[in-house]
Image 1: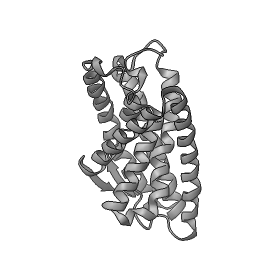
Image 2: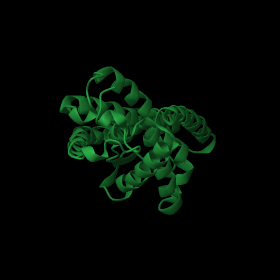
Image 3: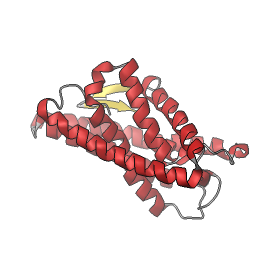
Image 4: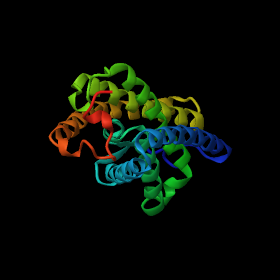
Length: 225
């Protein structure tokens, strides 16, 4: 989902700073709520874990350029289910920044766009999770249909933001629309695979009940709301 250099440039890139600030505001609000409910140590430990996992997703998992961006297996819904919204947002933002600083400095000018594309869909994911998962359901008991709904919500958010940045930067043209459509079609594979990854991770968590009191994990994993 990295926005390729040159897609948005010049004065237009200023909008990415505003959108990143909005995504950051959401992340800070979620972090404040997290600290009140689960404590600061939980946020720090969870954010460290999600940062490491985000770097794994970016650098180790297969990824390839398609159309206006790159297709990555970014398991946003997995991070959300395991650690909660705030650690997921912090880890995605920090992992993206570390990658830019250490591995791909040519991506740093696009950081505002990329962090918006990764973090903003968590807001929709959080909303959908509250309304599609019954309060008495533990996350480790989710079915494929529920995991698919969460994954589709997050990945649709990514595709929507990539589409916006491409059209904003390059304008509406046959070439841009074709490139965006190619990228969106490639992401259908991610939408199919991510729920399977979610269920595999949740199944492993179900067999790791000894960690249920760990401050770094989302309490909803093992206990109903």
